[in-house]
Length: 135
Ligand SMILES: O=c1ccn([C@H]2C[C@H](O)[C@@H](CO)O2)c(=O)[nH]1
Ligand SMILES: [Zn+2]
Image (cartoon, rainbow, N blue to C red; front, side):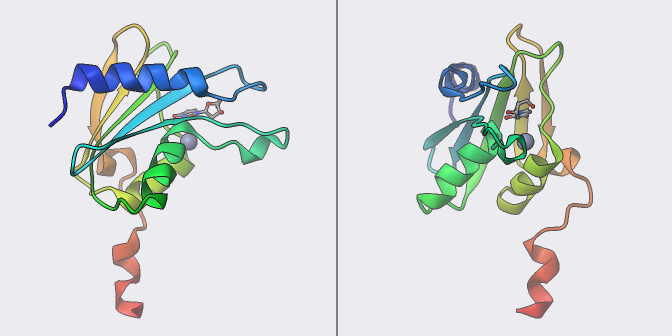
């Protein structure tokens, strides 16, 4: 397992690439694969506001598009008062690709954090398992 402090630092540094001309709210993410590869993500906004892609989804989509399917840890960082809170869309995408018991660390820039899990972020998620009987 990678050192958590280093992952948190990477998730914070990942904010530097955020494209956030509309919200001015950079968010970063660091996603660790089973083989300890780290995929970083930042939020990427759009003049058509609703098309913003959050940092967590950027990291997940980068990893999945490189063929990765097994993940073991996710860190999300933002300059929030308390730990950052992923949006509903990200919670659903996280539940698609990460095991229910996978740990997720939500952090801010002041050292506050919440260590949670995928299933705690989205209890009762609709997942690929629910479609299996239609295979
Ligand atoms: O967990 C979060 C929460 C918010 N945002 C982004 C979406 C938008 O670009 C900006 C303000 O909501 O922050 C993320 O990337 N991840
Ligand atoms: Zn989101």
